[in-house]
Length: 73
Image (tube, rainbow, N blue to C red):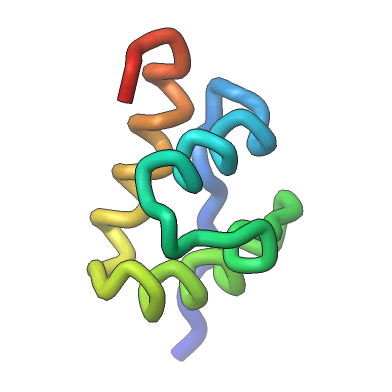
């Protein structure tokens, strides 16, 4: 059974979200956070392994960083 494709809901540009994620989690690298729209599945699979969190928590984390770009994380 194929999972329906999902799209991350980002308010801030991905480059900004990626930099904030690296600041919050030193284990994350540019390669880990490589992302192009339409490649959410690959990004989430990498982050699930590295962060050891379920997918829904990773999605919520990414989206919360995107929507709170002006607030210190």
